[in-house]
Amino acid sequence: MKRTKSRRGAKQNVTPSLVHWRFVVVLIAVVSVFVVLAVRAAYIQVIEPDALIEQGDSRTLRTRDMPSYRGLITDRNGAELAVSVPVRAIYADPKIIHDRDGFSQNRRWEALADVLGQDVNELRERVSNPERRFVYLQRQVSPAMAEYVDKLDIPGIYLRRESRRYYPTGEVAAQIIGITDVDDNGIEGLERLYDEWLTGTPGSRKIRRDAKGRQVEILETKSGEAAGNLQLTIDQRIQALAYREIKEAMLYYQASSASAIVLDVHTGEVLAMVNAPSFNPNDRSDVAPHRMRNRVITDAFEPGSALKPMAVLAALEFGGVKVGDIVDTNPGWMRLGGSLVKDFRNYGELTLEGIIQHSSNMGTSKLALSVPKPFLLDTYYNMGLMSDTGSNMPGESNGIFHERSRWSEFELATLSFGYGISVTTAQLARMYATLGNGGIKRPLQIIKKPQTEGWQPAEERVISEKNAAAILEMMESVTQKGGTAVKAAVPGYRVAGKTGTSRKAVAGGYGEEYVNIFAGVAPVSNPQLVTVVLINEPGGDLYHAGDTAAPVFSAIMGGSLQLLNIAPDDKQVTSTLWMKGAGNGS
Image 1 (spheres, rainbow, N blue to C red):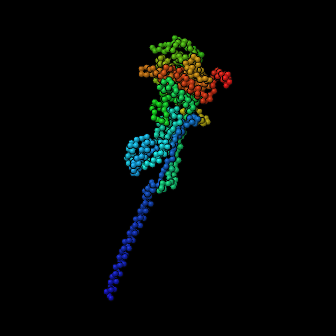
Image 2 (cartoon, one colour):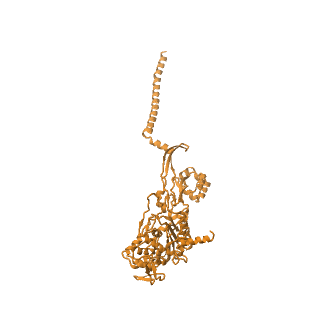
Image 3 (cartoon, rainbow, N blue to C red):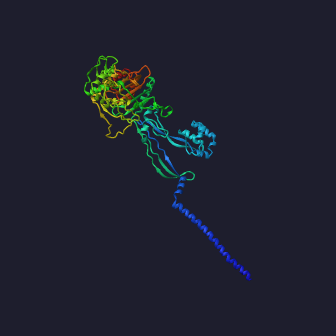
């Protein structure tokens, strides 16, 4: 009995000790786990929460850019000349293509290559590197093509929104407006000059998505800056008319190029500025540098007889002659320093009007030599020659003029009939606009300025109103019977102008190529428009400005006057036309 009791006592002494030890171990383990979890949670949420927040945001947050389209370019009446249209870009993620075995879908890749007009093997090669994450396959594709590509559902091939510039008038105003590149940045013309103004800042929107990619919350919205629009002084109706006539003239006279400009006399606003050959900005497959050049402002030429009114004007302004004076041009030629100055024939004694009407080299030379050299040169400068026109168009030339400390009589004589100086078509137009505006010179404008109360364009009086009107009346004889440009006449309107037929300078002298010019103002009784036409290097039998540039001037000026509803001022022609209409019962 005693032995049994001793065994129970030994067992009771051992069991509580084992239980206690195990309990302590478990308790410590459990507490340690909770402590570690608490410390970790505190570390993550209090000390370093950014890492997890960033990971969560990367999975759920997205920032979407709201599209911003380039500003409109319109003419003076609101007709659209340049607009932005929504298109799509096709791009690839090579890593996704490889991860999802996208190359196994051969028929879909062939269809993709076919719609893009590319070779399927070359297309695959472009996305063969799995380390790349972004490759453009084609930019600015049409919505229909984008929809077709989307339905192909090739893994790793995606679409993104972008815009493309579209020019409704095509080649008619291409050199003025210019073009943009594939990223919608202006690279030529007004698109380049006003690129910053025409480019808006896109807005953005930050959203949160759920696990299925659905939008559940809009967190932030940033408004972009709207693009500015540009309104030009161009009248698209006159622009189209002038371009049609210039293009036909270039082809008919087999010329290397042709240009024209139409100005509003009183404001200096450019109503039309055209060049041929031109290019289609919507299809740039035939774009070449010579087609993109805005020759009206970039190309300088010796204007020839179109500058002869300047010599008469300088003599009138100096006071050496009066409107009714006679100049003796006998015997029709003279030598100046060993060089010969001559007329087509001996015109004898000529009035100032006769000098302009018959385009007498002798008459303008004698008038130029009768004026002090500084006064003569100042007259040319004051009329806007040898300086920019103020239009601020990119690529504008100031012309070519070599100022000399000493001038020979022959050099001054050649200057009087338009040689020894090169000007642009725009400079010549500005000069004639100054004559039509009563001697007030204004800068040319291509951008329509807001007509706020009290606003006035910059202007400067450079010659007297009396002499400006006198020169206009003298130039009117050029388009009348006996003048050198009767083909420049516009039925119903009094037209004042001057032809210019000059040989093009080559190394060592002058070649056999010509530049034909006609510059004119109408109506003479109340000048409204100036038009200058240039036919460069006519290749046919006709090479005088009176036969080439003059009829083109008549078509452009006549059409422009009618489009603007400017009343006829030639009472004799108007009454004759009315009588014929009345006789026909009209």
